[in-house]
Length: 86
Image 1 (cartoon, rainbow, N blue to C red):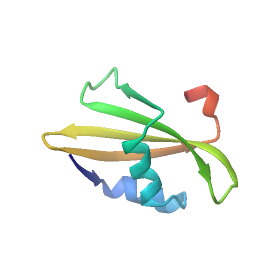
Image 2: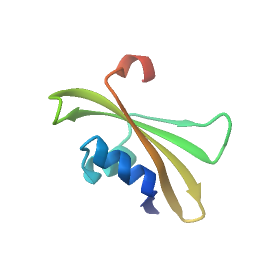
Image 3: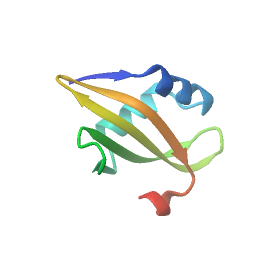
Image 4: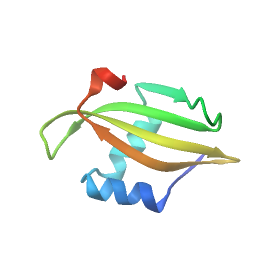
């Protein structure tokens, strides 16, 4: 399946200094996947990763939308509140 990043998601990666490879790893090896209650085509991929900038574990959440033969990463959330969201 093809993975594409929206301009907004790419902007969020840049702002948070997260490498694209980290986001792809979260999609390929998530700790948890949830389906949106509001839009059944939207998925939330969650992955704990080591944030190199802050030097501690963080939770990366990728909000994605399934479209035919591709997954579009719509936006990205990065938080230190792992237990709250996982």
